[in-house]
Image (cartoon, rainbow, N blue to C red):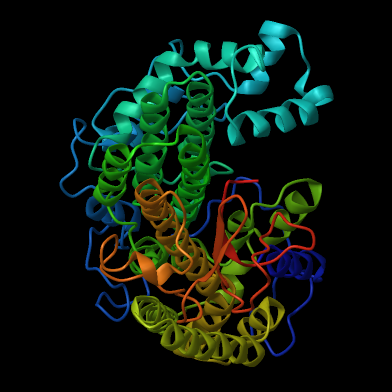
Length: 543
C-alpha cells in the first residue's frame, strides 16, 4: 500500500499544474498558486446511510458523516467498566507514555479514568534499566543482552546465573503485580481514538496502539520470572506466572483490531512454549497435572479473527471512505504515513488541486463493494472445515487480484477524475475498486496464524495428558490411541491434515507433531530448525 501511495504522490507532485489537464471540461484549467493559508473547501456528504453502504446509521458528526470511531468504541465497550477492564490496570503498569508520547485525552475518557501521572512505579524497559543501573549501553551491547534474555526465558535459572536479570525483575515487581491482577479481569477494551496527522484529524487508521506491544513485553518478563521461580524450586509460583501470560494473551486477543489479535496469539505462543519446559522440569504429580489441565481448560476461548474483520477492520475501511469524502484524495498522503522533504513537496502540489480533480463523487459503490468483500471474508473465516475455508480464501484472493488488474493504480484514477467525463457513481466505483485492492487485510495469513495457535493449544493439553499416562505407567504409550478412553475421550487429530498426529517414542521421552499449514511432513522441523520447517510439535524432554 505504501508503494502505491508514493506513486500517486510522485505523479501529482510532478504533473504540470499550470497547464490544462487533457480532456478536462471548459474552464477547468488547474493553476498551481501558492496554497498557503487557503482553507480546504467544506465538502457536502455524498453517500447514502444504510446497511449496505455505511453499515451503521450513526452517530453522525457535525458535518453529516458517520463517526466510525465513536460507533466502534461504543460496540467494543459494551458491558465494560473501569472495574472489570484489564486495560485500566495495564496502563497503571506501563504509565502514560509507553512509547514516549502521551495518549489523546479522549482515550482516558473512554476508559473512564484519569490519565496516569507522569511519575510512578511504572514498568522499566530492560534496555533503560541496564543503561541506568549497570552503565551498559544497549545500542552497543544489545545483542548480547537480548541473547542472554532469551536463554533466561527458555530455561530455568537462578539469580547466580543472571544477577542483572534478577535485579531487573525485582525493580519491576509492582507493575508486574498489576499485570497479573489485570490478567484476571474479564474484559479488555482499549479505545481506538484517532490522532491528528499534520494537525488534522487522521481517522481511525491513525488510532494509536502503544499499549499492545507493551503487553508482549509484559509477557516476556513474566515468563522470565517463571523460569527464575522454576530454577529456585517455586513450581507453583512459576505456573501462576505462566497462567497469567496465557490469560493476558487471550485478553489482548479480544481487542478490536487484527493487530491485537495477532499480538494475543504471539503471547499465547510464549506461554505454551514455557509450559512445556515447566512440564519437564517441575515433574508435576498426577494431582498437580489435573489442576494444571483444569486451569488450561478454564481459559476463555481465543476470539475468532472473523469478529475483527467484521467490525474494526470493516469500520476502518469505511472510515477511510468518509475521510476521502470529507477531505479529498489528499487524505491518502496522510494515510500513507510518509515522511521527509519528498512528502512535503508532494503535499504542496496536492493542495488546491485535488478538489478540482475529484469533483462530485458518489461513495455508495465504494462502500457497497467493500462491505461485500468484508462479508465474504467473515463467512470464509467462520467456516468450520479448513478445506472449505481454503477454497473460499482462494476465490476471494483471485477476485481481489482481478479487481486490481481491472481498476489499475492511483495514476489511472487521477487521470480518470481529471478527464471529468465520468459520472459521480462511476468515480466512486473506480476509486472504491482501488481501495478494496489496496486496503483489504491479508485475511488468509491472519486465519492461518489463528489456526496454528489452536493446534499449539491442542498440542499443549495433549502433552499434559501424556505426562499423566507416564505417571501412571512409568512410560509413555507406544501409540496415542492408548490414551482413549481413560485419559481422553477421543485422541485429537492434526487439524491441518485431518489425520492422526505423527507420534514417536524416543529413548528419553517422545515427540509428536502436526504437519502445519503447508500440509507437508517435514519430520517435525519448525521455523527455528536448520533447515526450517512448518511443523508444529512437542518434544519431551524439550531441546
